[in-house]
Amino acid sequence: MKRRRLLALVLAACSLALVAVACGGGDDGPSASGDTTGDSSGGKPTKGGTYRISTTQFNHTGGFDPTGEYLGTDLGLYSNLLVRTLVGYEHKSGADGNKVVPDLATDMGEVSEDGLTYTFTLKDGVKFSPPVNREVTSKDVVYAFERIGTEALVAQYGFYYTVIKGMAEFTAGDAKTISGIETPDDKTIKFTLTKPTGDFLFRLSMPAAGPIPEEVGKCFTKAGEYGRNVISSGPYMFEGSDKVDISSCETIKPAKGNDPTRRMMFVRNPNYDPSTDGTRPSYMDALEYTINTNPNDIFNKIEAGELEGEEESPPPRVLREYSTTSELKDRIHTEAGDRTWYITMNLTQPPFDDLHVRKAANLIMDKAGLQRAWGGPIRGDIAEHIVPNTMFNGDLDDYAPYGTENGAGDAAKAAEEMKLSKYDTNQDGKCDAPECSGVLFVNRNVPPWTDMEPVIEQSFAKLGIELNTREFEDAYPIIQDATRNVPLSAVPGWGKDYADASTFMVLFDSRSILPQGNVNYSLTGLTPALAKKYKISGTVANLPSVDADIDECNKLLDDERLTCWEELDKKLTEEIVPWIPYLDATNVDILGPAVTGYEYDQFSGTPAYSRVAVDPSKQK
Image (tube, rainbow, N blue to C red; front, side):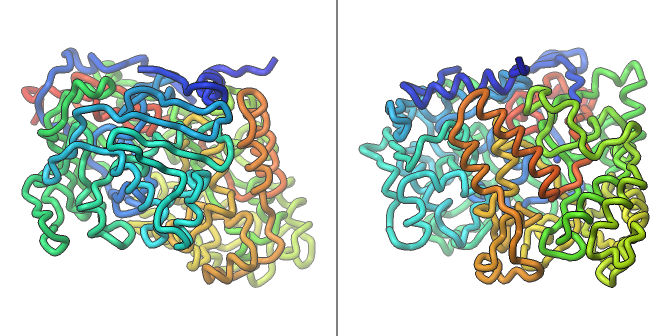
C-alpha cells in the first residue's frame, strides 16, 4: 500500500464536508528543529518588545492588497497579523499546521449533504482596527469576494472562487451581486457552489477571502492600491492606521507604517479581543520589517543582535557558520518548506516552444551546482518533478525521469534529445538555429539567484543556447506580465497555498492565465483566442493543455485524489515539460540572540509571527 501520511490525514478529515458537516478543530528535505513556540535562546516567550526582521526587497506581487497579493511571505503576514478568515490555521509546523480550524466563524460551518452549500456563523466581538472601529459583519466578507470578482483589481488566485455560483456572471458584469453568497443577517453567510469542491474550506482560508470594510475598500479601484491601507481584523495593524482620515475617499492617505520602498511597521490593534481567537498568542508588541539591499549586512545584524530574523535566503557561509558552531546551532531552524524552486520555460517562445529543447534543458542542467549555490543539502533535496515530495508523502521520492546519480546533468542524453529538435538543424546535438542566440533570461539581482547564473548559463551553453541574462531588483512583475513574452526565468519558486497538490497545478491551468499578475509563466493551455485577448505573441496554436486533467482530479477525494495528482505531475514532467525543477526546498530561518519564542507556520512557509517572542533586554 502506498504511504498516505500527513496530507492524507488532512484531506480525509475535510472530505467529510461532502457528506455531512465540515471537519472540526480548534521565499526551506525536512530536518525539523523540533521547536515550537518557546525556548530559542534560553528564555521563555513573554509579551512585549519589537520583533525586527529585514529583507533585500519586499517583492510584492499585488501591492500588498490581500485581494490580489500572492507572495508567500505576505500571505504569512496577513494570516498571522492582519487578516482573519472564516476558517484558518493554528500557525504551527507539521501536520497540525496544515489543519483548517475556525477563525472568524464559530465552528467549521454546516455543509449540505450534496456538498453544494456551506453556512457559517461569525463570532461576536471581532472588530476592525482603527480607523474603522466597528464589528466585522458577514457583509464585509461578501465585499471581499466582490473585490475578487472585480477584474480591475487582479485577484491573482481568484480562480479558486469561480466555483461559487454567480461569480462568473458578477465578474463578467452581467450581475450586480454574487448570487451564490447570501447574508441573511450580519452574523450569517452562506455559500452555494456550482459543484462539490472537496477543498473549499482550504480556499476560504486564503487571505483574499478575509473581510474588507467597503467604506474604505471602495476608495481603491486599481490593482494593489488598497495595500497601503489594509484595515486589520487581526491582532496587529499598520502603525499610524489610527491617524488615517476615512471621512471621504479624498482624505485617505497611506498609513505611516507601510512604506513599500523602505519599511513596514505593525503594531497592536487596540480593538483586537484575544478571547475571540485561540490560534494567535501575539506575544510581541510590534513587528518592524525593513528593506536592506545588502544581504550580508542583514545576517551580520542578526548575529550581532540588531535583528531577530529575516525573510531572505541565508548565504552558504551563514549556513555553515550556524550549523557548525555550537553556540549558534539553536538559532538555525530548518523545516519542510512544501516549496519547489524552478526555472520556468515559456512554451510560446523559441527555442522553448519545442518539447525536445525543454527535455534537453532538464537533462543538461547541473542541479547539484544550483543546490550548492543555495548552500547545499541543508536548503533542500534536488527536485526531480513539480510537486514537493512531502505533498505526496514520499510516494514519488524515487521518481526522477531526468535525474543523474550526482545531479550534474547528462550531456550525452541531452544531446540525443536535442537532435530531435527543429532548432538543431544538422542533428549534432546542439541548438544552432538563430533562435538559439541571445535568449532572454530574467533573473533576480541578489544571491542565490546571481550565484546560480554561471551554472545556468554554462548548462545551456552545452546545448548551444546562448542566454542574454538580465537581472532585476523587482523581477516578479516582469515575468508576471504575459505580454512581455519572457522565454526563460529562474525568478520563481512555488509553495503550496494549502495542503493539497491542486495548489501547484493552478500554475498550468489556462484559466489562471492573466495579462498581468500571471503565475502560469509557461502559458500551458494558452489558446489563440486567449492570446489575442491578452495580446500575447509567439507560438500560440496547439499548446498542450491539462485543464481537463485538473478538473478530473478536483472531483476526487482521499487516495484517489492523491494518485490523480501524482499522475498529472508525471504527465507534466515528461510530456509537457514547462519547468526545470531543481530544489525541493526546506525553509531555513536564522534567529537573533534576543528571540525567546519561535514557531514555523506550515501554512505560509514563514515564521509564525503571531507566535514569535523577543526579550528586549537582549536586543541591540
